[in-house]
Length: 107
Ligand SMILES: [Ca+2]
Image (tube, rainbow, N blue to C red; front, side, top):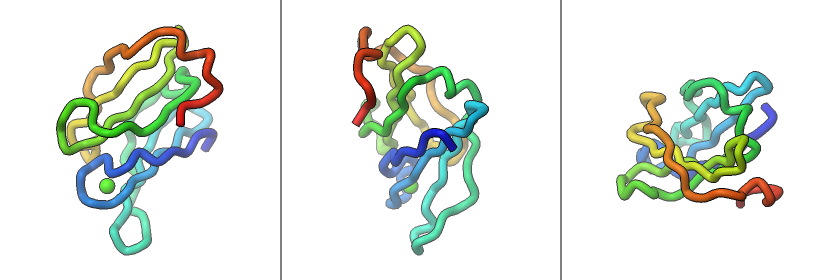
């Protein structure tokens, strides 16, 4: 993995989840099992290597699910809204702003 982040509780099951992006750009979500372990990863898609930064966000879509934000190759900050991330489905992303590539990382 070349990027590991926590996204908060992405699937609204009460446990904090983590994400890993591998060298090929695959993004996986690792849900907690609620007992100190982790469930099988959920594959969330490819192409995530194009983002210089990926971070967890609260629910920007006013749902019970948290979302992700990322800095795309143009330096735009974009959001990926989650429906139910256990299905691996993320809604289309929308731009938040431009010029975010000047920042070293998202916190
Ligand atoms: Ca969770």
